[in-house]
Image 1 (tube, rainbow, N blue to C red):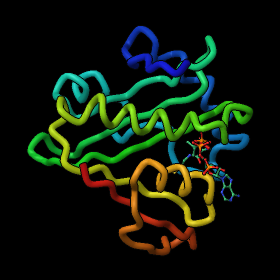
Image 2 (image 1 turned 135 degrees about the vertical axis):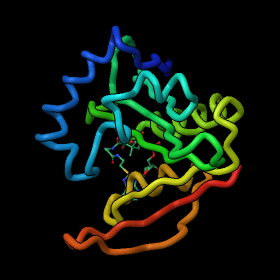
Image 3 (image 1 turned 90 degrees about the horizontal axis):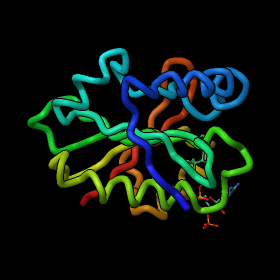
Image 4 (image 1 turned 180 degrees about the vertical axis):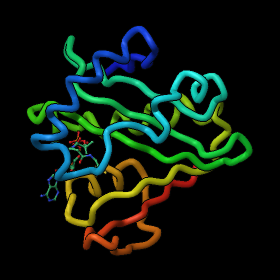
Length: 155
Ligand SMILES: CC(C)(COP(=O)(O)OP(=O)(O)OC[C@H]1O[C@@H](n2cnc3c(N)ncnc32)[C@H](O)[C@@H]1OP(=O)(O)O)[C@@H](O)C(=O)NCCC(=O)NCCS
């Protein structure tokens, strides 16, 4: 059973366990495991600019998910997600988590679309996002040679 546990100042310290996994393995897939400006996450949450939760599955915290907006007047949020526990990947959890998280937060965040960036070689993530209704918006290459796809889902 998948649940979301909202991140707050009392449980943010659990996040540090992801940092080691990020250094060891997750950084192959993504450049960050934190939302932007996460040092100031409490006011961002209070202003409705950020929803950020642990993914809780089978009695364990297995990863995290967030939706972040750059400005309150915008109707677009960027999605971030990772399942740190390798054994929990490829079981449909990511697809369920993303669909539910967007549905549960779209009204409160006043969203009409969600966007994300994904490395083009990350086939599993792309497939997961497509199953959630995201489509490719554009492809580009970063200065460091990383090839990236921007994806979008209209709500
Ligand atoms: C990306 C991530 C959140 C997806 O969650 P998930 O629970 O693993 O994904 P799902 O199981 O819901 O969906 C994965 C799909 O990719 C497919 N897939 C996996 N590897 C594949 C491959 N090499 N080629 C084609 N399809 C592949 C799976 O079969 C599944 O599709 P299906 O249900 O049609 O069979 C998770 O894998 C993860 O955290 N990965 C590491 C970090 C990461 O990549 N973060 C995203 C950065 S943008």
